[in-house]
Length: 149
Image (spheres, one colour):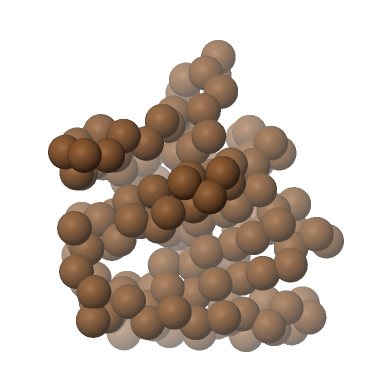
């Protein structure tokens, strides 16, 4: 396993659109730090919604990205709903899904988005315990006092 860092981001987001806005902020920050980022979405609809959002979430920002359906394109950000598809060239996994992704050990860093609802918190607690059980001490970042946009 090469995962050296797992970060949990506590967001005030309850709705998926809010969570995607926070994801855009994290994606932009990681991209500016030259990470190659795989964003794992819970389903194809979330991939499509995040793809649309990344094009116009801020007027002064452009984040080069692609979706798993754009097989010939190599961009620093890949949006997909299945890690096993094409994640081997990426160093940071941003997990917007519910479970610890299979193959998570292939990534140097992992970011887990935590929505501010009971189901999301409980799921994140389980993931936190899982990573600790793998010998990784996750870090927690409280974004609740920050706005998504």
